[in-house]
Structure formats: structure tokens, C-alpha cells
Length: 440
Image (cartoon, rainbow, N blue to C red; front, side, top):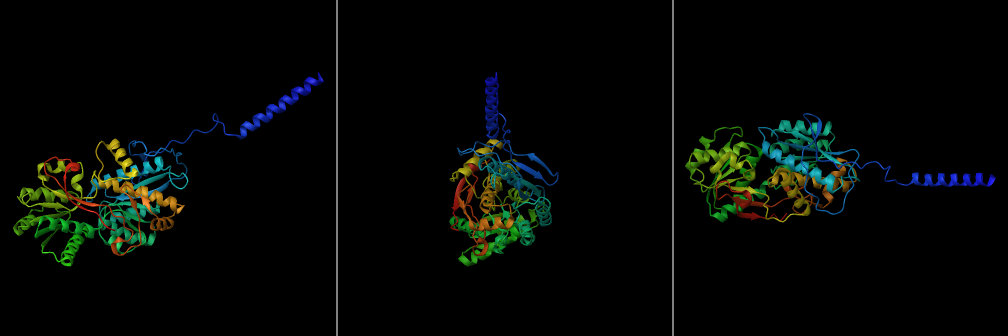
């Protein structure tokens, strides 16, 4: 009996030791369930709530799986026009791109800073400097964002920069092009869009290519419009071009451009350059058609609003024949990041992506890479990382050097001029009449 009691005691000790060893090791039956991969999280400042705004993205181009990000989110502000008098259609496309940027960072990159998710906080700047400044302050003071992307209107971006240079949280121009946005060399000012001197260089090359000698430039009374008038005059003189330029400045809030367009018609130009934004740009095309100015006289739109889905709905056959600036064409080669975006966008929205969304997406992904290089969610460390790093965007490698003039903190995409040759034409099938590859 004594022998049996000793044997039983030894068995109990052995069992206890085995259980203790198993409790110290990871057990698949007791491990906590993995945190689901977050979708693109948008925090609306109006409602101060979160929503999963972007639909499911396309599969990742990478084969390596990343752990789901967790912990305190790193917030990035999206300050963009979502209501009049701003170009609300542009703002909506920018938000789409930013949301897909969040999905890419959280799902493909596994978040930032060793696995923290990112989220965006959206503010409507309404295309006005006053609302832009107020929105920037809310993003910084209330939501503690580490950076702000989404700027579209140059006047807003310029006003925000004047506040941001003292606050210290960097601002990315997503599609604002006035040269002073970066030419003032503020540490907080970054841009992933081309600058107006390049835009003007491109259309002056086109004017020479087409043999035009009389040009009417009809511009809205904003920093964007006035800046392009002055830059065009400067480059014509600098290049010694034999071009007679006549400028016409219009109120950006105007609902009738007929008086000015009749003056343009009387000038008998070879080309009309449409330097208006949003609804005013559409109005200029429509009313120029109505008075017989366009398409008899060619018109060049100063930016890429004709690639948007609503272009033909707004103008119908009146839009046929329009030339327009673009910054992306499907024939361009894309990085794996860019290819992921195209698939994700088409799956989410059942339409091809356009540049406004691409630029916003690229800004978010670049910021995520810079945060990882900085090693912490600190605006000053982020600025230093952006200045010293090389980052992968949708079209290639980008850097933000302390370069001269407006090329400070500037990453420049390509510039093209496209031409609609038939009504309802898919912009991807539009004639490519000019392509400029910046050397900087």
C-alpha cells in the first residue's frame, strides 16, 4: 500500500509539471482572436464619428501577409473642398483616394510604427481661405493630426500655409499648383502636384506646336487664375515668343460670362485658355459654345476636370473638341502601389480612377512610409524624414528636397494635353496631343 501511495504521488507531481509547462507556452485553443484588419476609417469633423467609407479594395499585390494593425491610430487630416464655392467634385475624388490610401497602409503595409493603424479626419474647406484656415486649426488642435493632405485650391493652400508655418504640422498640396505654395520655402509646405510654371511651359510648347499666335486667356480672379496670367506673360517674354496674349479676368462667382466671352470673340484668337475651376470652368465651355466661339476657336482647359464622370453629363455635345491638361493617362507605367490602387478603385467604384484620387492616395502612402522612417508620430520628425527620404508612390520614386524656388519640397508628376474628338468619348481614348516629362 505504501508503495502505491508513493507511486500515485509521483504521478500527480508529473502531471502538474506538464500542465504548468503547457500554460507557459502559446496555446492555439486559448490565444485571443486576431483583430480584424480595419477598413478605411474616416472621421468626419462635422459628426465626429467614424465610418467605413471605402468599399473593399482589390487584393494586395504583395504575397507576404502582414499582421493586422492595432493600438492607437495615427491620424492624418484631409482638408479639401466638399461644398461650393469650392470644387466639391474634386474634393470627393480626393477623399476617395485618401480612403484607399488608408486601406493600403493598414492592409498591405500592416499599419505604421510597428503596427499602429492610420485613419483620416476629413474637413471641408469649401474652397475659401477662411474655411481652410479654420479647418486646419480644428484638425491640429482637436484631432491632433500629424499632417494634412487634400489641398486643391491655391488660395486656400496659401492661406493655410501662413498658419501652418507657425503651428508646425505639415501641409501637402494634393492638386494646388500656385508656385508660392512652395516658393516661400516654409518647412511645412509639401506638394505632390505640378507647379504652375510647368503648366505654363507645357501650354506654351503646345501653342508653338500648333502654330497659334493670338491667344485669349480667360481666368478667374483667384491666386490660381491671376498667377497663371502673370506666369504666362513672364514666360512669353523670357522665351521671346511671337504670341499676342490678351487676358480677361472674371469673377469666380459669376453665373454669366457672356459679356467677357463676346469680347474674346471680337479679339479673334487662335486659342482660348480656360483658367476657371469647378462650375465656372463648365460654364465657360457652355457659354462659349452658345455664342459660337467654341469649338470654331479651340479651347484649352487648364486642368483635368474633363476626365471626371460628370463631364459629358454636364456638357453633352458642347464638350466635344475640348483640349485639356491632364496629369495621368492609363498608358503610363505604374508602380505596384499604383497598380494596386487602380484595381482597388475600379472594384470599389465601377469606374476608372482619375488623377485627383491618385494624388491623394499617393500622399497618404508616402506619409506612411515617412512616418516609419521618422520612427514616431511627431510632425517635426515627419518633416525631417520627408526631406531626407526617398519614397515609392503610384508613378515612381519621389523625394522632397530643399530645392530652389518653387521646386522646394516638390514631387512632380507628368503633364499631358488630351483632346476630345467625338461626343461622349472615354477620356482614356482621347487623343494625346502633347506630353511633357518634367526634368526636375
